[in-house]
Length: 196
Ligand code: F6P
Image 1 (spheres, rainbow, N blue to C red):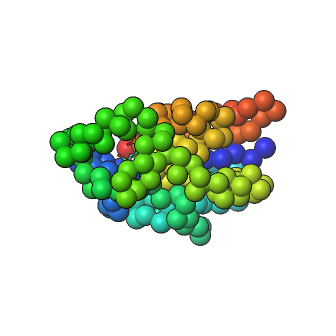
Image 2: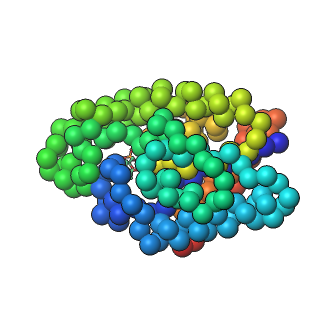
């Protein structure tokens, strides 16, 4: 049956500086991931005589630029944007710890429910993803979703049947494509590391 492919965007300027959120560009390494991703998709689909998958990204530059070398139209969902870190957008974890120590502690205690002042919680993200997940289940074609850390955790957790409170800590590294294929019981998972 058809597979769902999940990945985060290529490395961004903020990933290097370890800053939250924002709308930064890809680094050179991030751009190399975009090239490798296009090659992988070509081998996985065109090379096997299959049509390209549906491609869904967020509206942020780093995810749109990650699919730029895949020769097909992509759909940008606002619901796929990264968790809004509110007052912490653009800050490093060190800065958050210094400037908002209570906020930092509260988030460590309950990452699922903690809502950034002026921003979102993981529960908020999971809720706004509902229409996306309905579309994923309705579509018969393979889909490549290129999004962000918190959002890919939520989607991945949903698809493999994790509890909500496990989602905020799932391992979703950069530059790895997670291929999920539904089976009678659960999902078959393959992780494709595209080293850049
Ligand atoms: O650091 C990259 C990033 O995508 C941030 O933009 C975002 O705030 C964060 O990861 C989400 O991960 P966590 O919930 O673990 O802070």
